[in-house]
Every structure is written in structure tokens, then in C-alpha cells.
Image 1 (cartoon, one colour):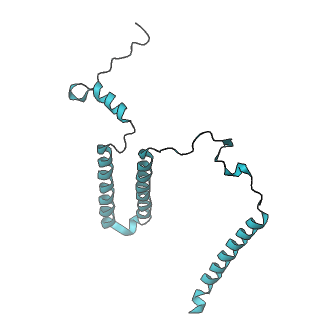
Image 2 (image 1 turned 135 degrees about the vertical axis):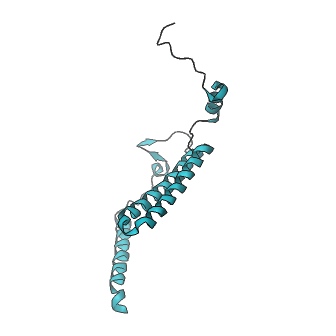
Image 3 (image 1 turned 180 degrees about the horizontal axis):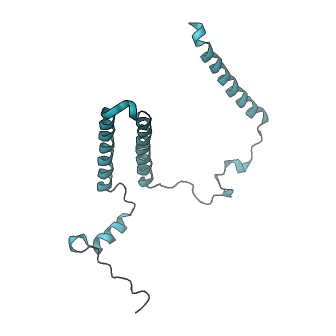
Length: 146
């Protein structure tokens, strides 16, 4: 039993030793003096002016979640592509259902506007430009002619 665990224990001991060595070297070689400049938020070599706190649009979070979901889809597709010959028709039907569900999810997200980056003001302006039947009434450009 112990012979089977020996490689794992050696690996675990080496990982712990490396982590302890890195922390010890950082503590030994690191700077100890405190300077007022250490308390400033630092961005690209420029000391920031004003408050560093601001609200981030929820669209960024939605985009990140959508990216993670569809990125995981790609992982499953790669795994399926590796074993496509072994899976046969059953695997093909399963992956077709999987892609179909994700396509329906993407269409739903598109329909509810999760992929729309326009602001409320831009949406109202576009809605006011639309005429009957959803056709946008924008005058064609004259090419600089009056």
C-alpha cells in the first residue's frame, strides 16, 4: 500500500518544499522599508488622480459568463472529436442534441437582448427611427452634396 503512495508523497513533499523555499526567499530578499508611494494605486506607471472606484457595466459580467459557457462547449466538442469513431451514431446524436440545446440558448440570449451593447438611450433613438414594419427611416447620405 505504501509503495503505491510513495510517488504521490514524494511529489507532495517536493511541492511543499518549493513553496516554502519561494516564500522564504521572498521574505529574505524583499524590501522592508515602507514608503508613502506604496499606498498609492498604480496603473501603467501613472499615479491615479481621483477615486479608483467606479461602477462597471453589467454587460461585462454577462459577456464573461457567456464566454465561459460557450468556452466549455468547445472543450466538450474537442473531447467528442477525439473519440468520434468510437462513439458511432449514438455519440453523433448526443452531440447534435448538445449543440442544438446550446444553439437554442444562444438564440434565447440574442432574443432577450443579452448580446445587445446599446444603451437605453440608443435603443430609444433606434426605436423612434423605426417606421411601420420595423423599417428604419434614415435618409440616405447625399455624398456631401446639398
